[in-house]
Image 1 (cartoon, rainbow, N blue to C red):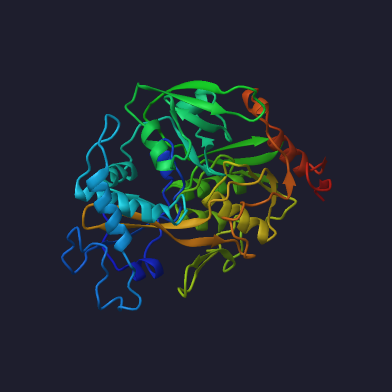
Image 2 (cartoon, rainbow, N blue to C red):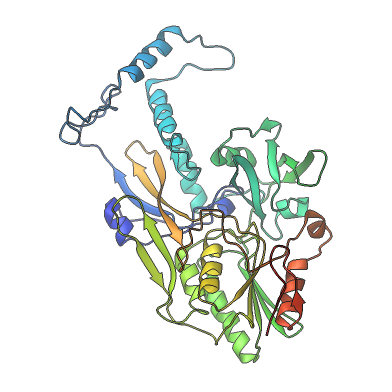
Length: 434
């Protein structure tokens, strides 16, 4: 897969925004819906070790120049005084520079903004090309803890009993304390047939759980349809390149069957392509209505994405339910938020994950890469998805015990609601469909 270089500004304003369910590709990672590929950056100056951190005079004047005396002082002190031991290795100058850049990027405190040195950047390129094996689950940082967002259906993680909300305490006895998601990814992934042992903290358990998972090639599921009690149910597992085509086929099946009630199940769906999210939401939202908007930093004007008007019917909160949970993230939150804000669906389930940012991948001339957050998602009503996720209209939780027993109170509540029965929210007043 290749991408034509373009300026960062062109990439932001006119480029194709590509959402990649990276955690799936990495068999355990974070969400990068809206990932964008920018140009390779080449400094016009010679970038020697001792000029790397000096800004060009035509860009920064003397009054604005950052004082880097302390940086170079620490550099010299480390060279002079650091005793290399059995647990550490001598660093090359280039490795020191990469470490400094990594520290700068980490200082921003954004778990989705990451500096990838050349080796990691190369591995990243292989991952987005689809060459991977792993355990088949999404992980992200929640309150600073490496947390399972969702295991994918019919994957080693799901078969081993991993569930959404599990906190990874250790990976093969390596503690995850203060660990970044990309670092956890490196430990989780590996060759097909090998085993990784995950130490889990699970709410309600009094002891940690040690769960061995055998890695395998991961096939990313997309969707399935079924009919239960006269309700047409579409389960969407990812927003990939074929998702919209499959949803279009599902909508045709819905119309030909003369069904009047539908459940769109987005639970455990970590996201994917932005284009797919807009196209799928367009099957439910009237033409021209806002699906999602992007809010950039600084003075950069935002982008607005509108429905393409491919409605399969006249949906309403009494005839359409969207199911969400803590594993619904990114593109899932975009679709659920749009359908909720435009009053065409009732959202049932648990609070969504809250991944509402856009990353741009910038290639650097050293063959390293910088993945940087450049925008935030807003629902049509202006709700920031990043700030705690989306709250459902009717809150129904699905406990770990429910999952392990294959019980689904959320789906049961959706079916009851669409049947016109009273459904009591765990946090709201009882609601009933008209």
